[in-house]
Length: 511
View (tube, rainbow, N blue to C red):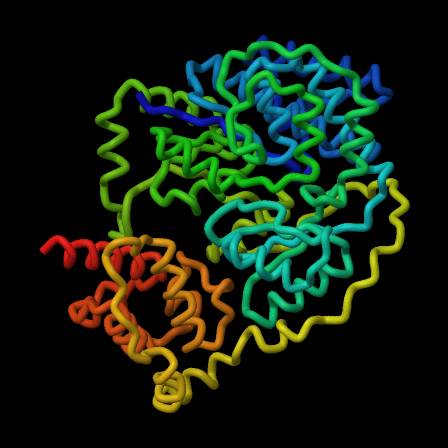
């Protein structure tokens, strides 16, 4: 059996007109669900949500972000019903940001109407707060993104989302986000501001969270049919109050990377996106290379794509052999993934493509509305810290003088130190020492050296310097064979080196 996880996107661009036409015609459950969302929308003074999504019509009478949220909800829940109707059974459902609300409805914890009302209530309190904030996606791991935010030292500027090994999101006041963007550019880190109606996942949203708890109608909470994993709580949803769940997420960090990896480690073989384009599945592919990802609505025949997934569930041997088969160009396993979205179709798709360094261009996504908010003046940005000026040494200078750099730092780096005893030499201890050693040599603050960064591909450490550094690691941990391990040079990361050191020390102690 192929264990599938259904993933629900958060805030993305407005869906295309007619995207649900075929599903509406095929499935009674989809027609019923869209009718219930329309009814809830009318009761809140909003237009019908389904009309534009079912008809081949690109026009829209949207009235701000509330309708956009409900359209995204309608596409996600309709895709979920198609999956269930065709026999796909999730082992869990996961939502990104507001997508957690869609996940609760899909699992049966909330009625469709209550989920729609809660989504609108959330949007309204965020609009009323009128916070002048922004969100910036940065192409580095969470540790380095958090260190960058901490350099500015403002309570509302925080690491908001850990999406993938090389995609994090920082949320904060607009003026500070622009400063962070300049620092990221100086460091050579790719970044892109996200065009979202309501920047969230920062302590700055505490006022909106309180307002939601005070004003949102309490809603009945069902037992649910499927397991729901919450990336911001870091656990499964139990009997938590739905309003508290949605309110709490406004100020909390979303740890999608960790949730995805935990589900895969527990046996999840495939991730299915309940949305129009690959958004969350882009994070999945970057976090778990080789895993199967399916985005039915981006396929030419969505229903056939789902049926193929279900067929995989009944033929594990075929599925496993396809994953193990080499690709046509010999680069690795064949993974059935969707075609890329058209330019500008999804607000977060260009970010995923940019930050995972694919060849897909990253045009700016169109904005289909202007949120009716009156933003107060953003807090005055503190004077730019000195750290950004010195954090990123110019790579050409380092590369041009390898012979002089190494002797300059050699005495401090290789001063006689007693070899560590095998006892207590754990991975974290070794990694900390490696960060210090490599940071001193390269001129980087240790906290900005990600354990999964390629020493050459990401940090620009050319092979001669890697040889010199590996020699220092060999001396530091009394492992003479380490300096001849060519695999640590061809695909070197601090994680691989640390794991090799820990393993070699343990083997030496056992002799």
